[in-house]
Image (cartoon, rainbow, N blue to C red; front, side):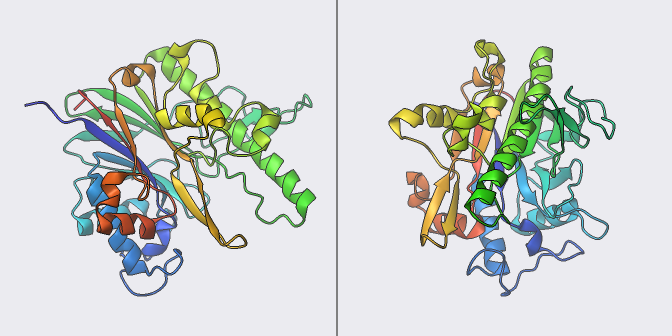
Length: 351
């Protein structure tokens, strides 16, 4: 009997935090959630359907419930996993963020062991240009004026050392990169200025990530980098101004393919600049235009050794995946659960 592949996922759950009280108890009621016209109970039920259908061995959750002096990401997620009857029932986080959104990992302890294992030296308050630890400060010249600026992650990437049941070691980095939206800017010129500033910061975060990736490739680590990059090849007009998207920087732009990460959806988007064929992982309602906008924001990138195992990627898009279209309950759950859709990867011969 052939062993099944290892399934890992990334899933941005819109304001997961709003579905729990300060004691980590689910707010399974009829009060409004942060999802438009979706109650908290309906969103929780939809999430249970989606997580159950994915049946992943490990899920990187973006916008996971908050950790602070009162609230616990781990308690909330493990409560949810018990209620939903998930195999992936053990949770961990890395460095808590300054927001109400954490990056967490929910996994099946019978299949995986996982621990927070940050890499890099802590930077001083002045920052470092040499891939410092993700909860400290990076220095980079964002505007080519020979003066380096300081960059911080509002949500420090989650760095995990994972071992599968068979003893296969993996490294995983969970990412929620800075949004490029110009929220708060008034007027067209202010919006453009803020969009360019945010784009620079997002690119600097991706350069910081790429430095860390280079270190893992140097050591021959089997690496996965996954999450919401708030970016994608060809996504906006500012990409031409800076030469590359942040996603391309993280994947690798050098000539040596042995130094590149791979994600087939990113590859489709890069080639789709010509053909127009681009998959999407997120769906947002634009009130002024009274229509939905879709974008490719969520990725699972792998190192060359994992790509050589011929893994299978899947975007759980309710309208683009025929198997999901044929399951009305799952299709509706995906629409109610979040404004992003999960992405999974099945990797053979590692469990």
